Length: 193
Length: 167
Image (tube, rainbow over the protein chains, first blue to last red):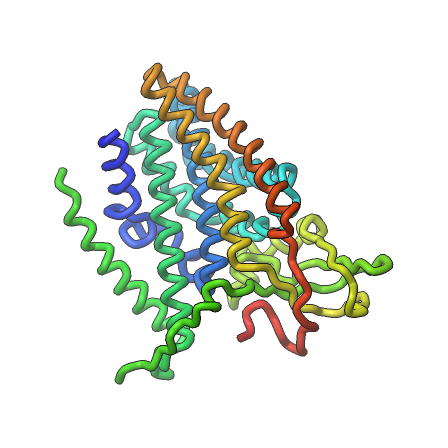
């Protein structure tokens, strides 16, 4: 169990998808104007990344690697991610139409989120077992959601602050993001091995 | 220079999430609406080159997100209105739709890993856990719906130029 916890802390905080690996920056800047949209986007992305990681692990281990089709990896993974988004959309729509009306807005944007592809490609490099891959993907996406919500909260506060005219809007957003990244660098001190 | 940041009011933590919708039909005392906000980012200057914009605006997606409201205020077809839901509903909805299936999937996978230790068994257990989680999510969502937690409510008629992101 300790192995699982260390793996998850490392993936979520030390090697944060957004602030350490610089993936998913489009949604990081685009969907963080309000906390509620950041929560919706974070939750749906967490689901898609984790489900995609499980399916892509199976595709890699049972299909691409045995048949020497490694050169098709990126294309195959993109297809799986698109299918996973469709699966998520269909299942939410069928299981609960009201929930789909509430949350369906976030799903199309996930297909074009490079964090999803980035995480599953990192898993291939890691040569991990299925359960470790799944937990790594889950923790990475939790780290993504955490940063999205933190940043959205900061931007909501900044909207009320008196910011110098030249820094208002995206510039102060980028400065805030850099300070957040510096703060997260502190977690690298937790990495002992 | 120190920026003056007003303290957050207690009730702002339980704010209403607002969105703009357009009335597309009326049937007796019920109005049918379609949301105007078609992507989670609300569009931007790069909308012409952004894939998310096109995906979110196709007719089938808008129709799938159509919802009804009691038409107590005499809404007419074509009117733009501001609707809202409790911010907590979004969090509850997200947890119900995504957290429950994920946790059952991870839980089943971890149990299979500890008991069997074979990746094939973990894969089967994870998929089974996901299926069970989706069924549980359906049950919980039905309870939320019965309590009215997921239903949007009419707030006001939208002003000229008012959009999802106008303050």
